[in-house]
Picture (cartoon, helix red, strand yellow):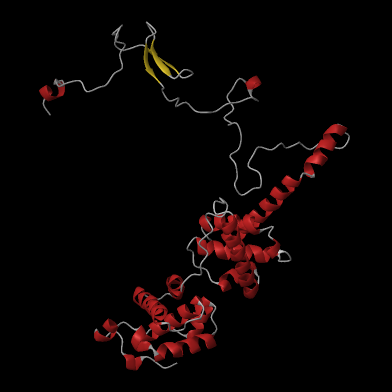
Length: 342
């Protein structure tokens, strides 16, 4: 690069926008920002140059650190928690040891008997348990939040009286998975919570009934606005994860999803659970593409019994012409004669 290029100066127009006092015309200008009034004034003559400015300074404030000659970065209070019964600030009375002030001990005892604090403590304990269960299966945070919202909405309903807390937590986790589009079967939730599958399904139906009644009574309820979609997962939602656990190729996985969609459209295996349809579709796809896949392997990953897989597979085999894609047969990837009957 030449010396002339380095020493050359810009000769075009000045595009910098600078606020200058029209009376003083001092450059650089002496400007003062007065956030209390929202004005910018000239420091020489006091002329107001701009108004309604936004205070961009931080909002820290302190009341308990005046004697330490320092700033305590604490805001005015904690943010409200919609998962608790009260969203306002509360008072916590410190522990008073034996032999201390009698008034302090009485206040502490009254504080411990507070009904609101007891409810919040019970909710926090339940939330911790739900969090632990969800972490056990590495479920995403959306599932945990949806399960907590559901638990708070239905925990005191009369329809759930007599039901164990474990069954309620298992049911809200199952419905939280459905709400967040994270497919999980009843058997997986049973293995996670040690609650029988029939009991989880029964409590889940009661919770859906409670949610529906609450929505009818109060459509604007904020605690329920994230829990309105509680429909059952389809077989296609489960197949991809099952095939991943079985180590199957994308070709077999896509074929199993196609078979499951065809079952839904045609009405084959109508009334069967999505897990059963998914297991049978995976077995049929594996046999169609000549993959070494046993019914026992599918049972271990899906939780569907071998007898159920056999029965469902026989129904699918009778309708294989409608379930299999004609392109697979035309391209030679699948030969109908090689598909076993059982």
